[in-house]
Length: 487
Figure 1 (cartoon, rainbow, N blue to C red):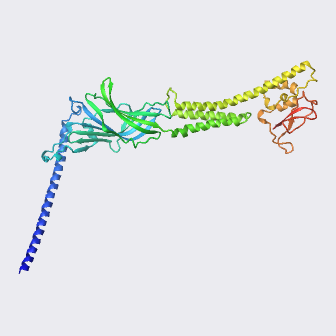
Figure 2 (tube, helix red, strand yellow; figure 1 turned 30 degrees about the vertical axis):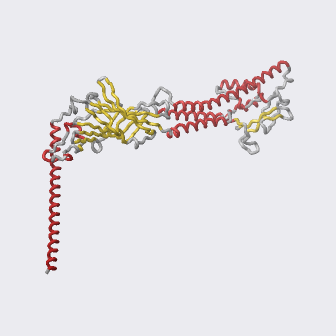
């Protein structure tokens, strides 16, 4: 009997435990459900109350008056986030940058920390820490700072897919106003050391209408972000610096914030586009020093080509720079390269003039000496046997004027003979001094002629043929010069 009673008591105990557990779960679930419902009602009430509050504050809100009007100046914080450096132009002295500008201030007229019946006295639930993110159009309904860029040339606000503007309201009236835009800012560059230069480009931020007695701007603790990730094709950003100062203008004293970027130009582009080509062109102009000075066409063509190439390189460099009055480092380098190239061309002209001038003077001197000997002695007993008296074909030039050419031809017949003069009728380009053929191989070749100095030959009517350019005949004692003439 005792055993049966003990079993019944155990069964009753288990049943009580199960019932108690079920009741506990039911009560807990009901409580959670009630809490969730209460929270939903509170959130709905808050949203409804915030909407009503915003509508109310906008109804009595005067957009024309700054916060704390008539009292202490309003403090507006600033920070920038650099999205990209788009372009830097030396010609226009400016640079283009895309960035995010955020402004922070407090407007107590926009506080919405009252939730009516839904405020239960909890410090964490008083609405002060709540933040509302509103559309950019809301900025047109509240007061915003009249911020502008003092060194701005052209700017535009991005509007894809919507206008890139942001307004955030804090429950205590804190306002965050952000926007994304692209601006072209002036940057006065010092190009004395171009292309080995470094530049300082600034962003100048200022209030257009509010003086320091109304609005005071300041940089936030982290004023600039994104500089480390920004890349430029021709520059390296060494660093940046922020500062603020008071700018005194005709309409008053204004607070100005300044952000300065330190930019170092990369030399790699100019090495391959300017320095290396100009070095090679100068070295190419020196090749003419190893070309025979009688090769007029080759040396003149090479000299003029190098001069024109250096001119083209200089023009290309100047096209990417502004028209400034002072001399740049690249100008000095290109001018020196041009001087070397031009001097190589002048060197040939000087050598050519000196060479033929000396030869002409020697011939004139020999002829004068021979004439003096003729005066003292009879013509038959005087022999002027020198190779300088030989008339070389390249020394003879035909006059482009027919009348002068005819008179010169008639005057020369009596002195050097018809046979010798006939050889001079060919222009210099057809007279060559190399043996390209003979009568035996039936090339178009006029036999090698020995130009005879009639005054020194014992037999004036004899002509002999030799393979050497200058040879003295063993029979007659005459000096011959061999020339190969193409017909």
